[in-house]
Length: 231
Length: 70
Image (cartoon, rainbow over all chains, first blue to last red; front, side, top):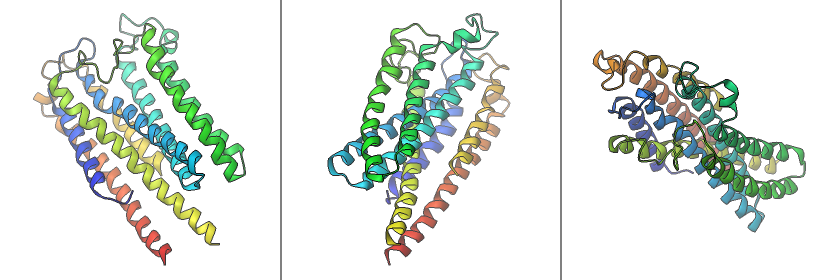
């Protein structure tokens, strides 16, 4: 949390992702044209979210094993920043889609209802809402030990629910959202070797940024707790 | 604190779709007229702004943490 090297890495990776992401030559994909560049940013949000939720559930499990409240603070802050990146991913996806596969001028577009019923959109919304419920659960319990225990258990289930809602069900059902065959982030048919050279560092950079923001929040939280205990 | 950066990031995304219509995707009109560099510069300023903001928060945190240790 206090080391500098990975934060410098994060800055360099994201600056690279931004400059190279906008200037690199992209493959000529139908209907997407240059917007394929959003892969570096929109999908990066999801990679950040996944990394943060993994950190969160690991700390939740650590809390359940040791009952050390520090892990509860860690889990909560990772989950909150993860949720934030998930919402950003959803918003960026909404903007991107409204110019591509959800564009009313596009022949494949049927109606807003068809877009709203898209399995991937619904699945991701459900996953994010489950994490929203995690915070509502936290605020409903006043005793901090009980709160930590209950929310740690809920966190494990919330993390487990990520997989059927985001990864499994959307791939079984037909969808207009790109990346229908397998993982949309890692699909080799949708990108080129040059794009992949920018894609993977970008994903790592966004994940590091998410962790950085989370660690700053954690440090603020820990300071507050310590000052409360002192008093 | 974090929503400010999030809003900036979100708003900066609205810049990108505006340049899709003008070209067919092989080698963009954006690059040939040099306008893409403006987009790169703007977004870079936003990104570096977010990093300096984070850095500022970290510095203040370090001071507070050092104070608390005493």
